[in-house]
Length: 134
Image (cartoon, rainbow, N blue to C red):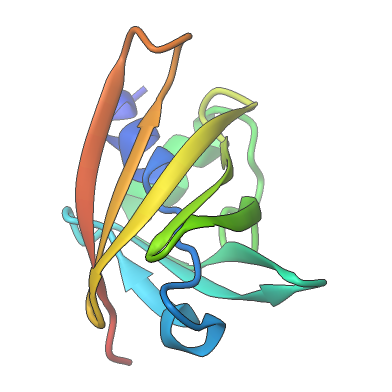
């Protein structure tokens, strides 16, 4: 799979959660590589997020892993506030066909620090995602 590790990490850290108010976190966020945009919003009282745009390479990697249509795939699920400016939830990683725990910290109105571990705390990473202006 092309760039599989980068794609997996990009999706893992695509998560976003409400900052100090749900409205401040709703919107579109782009990963550091510029290959995936996730749109976040309130879903039944919790934060959720789905892929609203993906590069050709990201779509090809997802397709190689069995995800027929990456656009529209729900990646962020069940995010709830865990502290002021922090949320905990689950992120679906299409390349792996699995869901993992994740945390989000809003650094300011335009930046999120997304953290998570792929395998029982052995492979952890953080990324800074920025608000995407359409």
